[in-house]
Image (tube, rainbow, N blue to C red; front, side):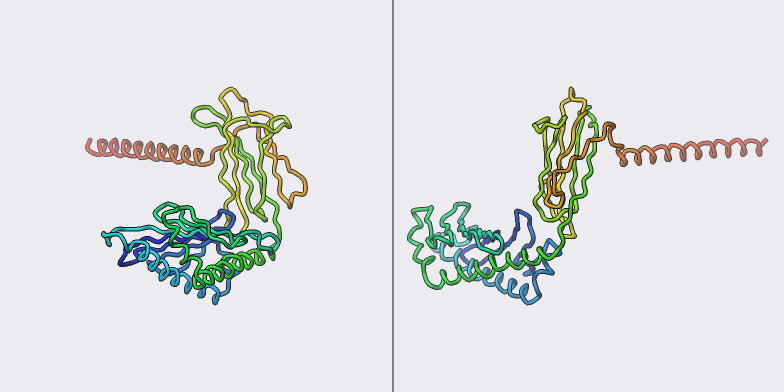
Length: 308
């Protein structure tokens, strides 16, 4: 999905920001201030050749001109030409095994969706009756051809390039660690972390004595990308103070595991290394201060003996 947000007045475009997502993960961004495309996921840069990135930059500059015209057109009847306006374009497409499943565009003005279109249907849907008079612009040959070209080249084709490249890498099973902590309030915190896995799809669940259920307050990090194009997920379970925390396991399902893998929770709380390190530092400081104090006291006694 691509999200473009433009802010400006009748006279000028003040800012244009673009963000690209794949499976809800931000992979790239653009800002008209520095006029550079930033790729957030390193391996995607390898999937896109330099010429393609140059084309994307030229496209972003085209977007600036188009948004400048749109803001000027929609604000022309406003008596205050210095007022700031915000326009947004959301475009998303989905493919499955290299076949396009869907492709949609949403047009938003001042936080309200005015129009949207499903490319498979090919007809703009008006969501704001008072601006329906503008539909002839969207239906004009210029904007229709522009829309189709952009969605084909920079949504569907871009996604295909990335997916084809990602399919070249080997699948990797997750590395799983399970920990058992006690928070300051005395509640037991169980954590199950899976990292280094590919492809992205994975399922982590808690079982107690072999049964799935809701055993406490669950929180999830969400599936996040690692720098090497693999993924990371952490699932945390906070138990009530009455629960002893025994009998729990983390069940992990991933294509590379073939069958669900079961990881038992350690019976004893996991040692908090940062806390041990802090205690060690404190003890070291106390020992150092004690030695310094003893040295000062000895030095004073020595001075007194010299005076005598």
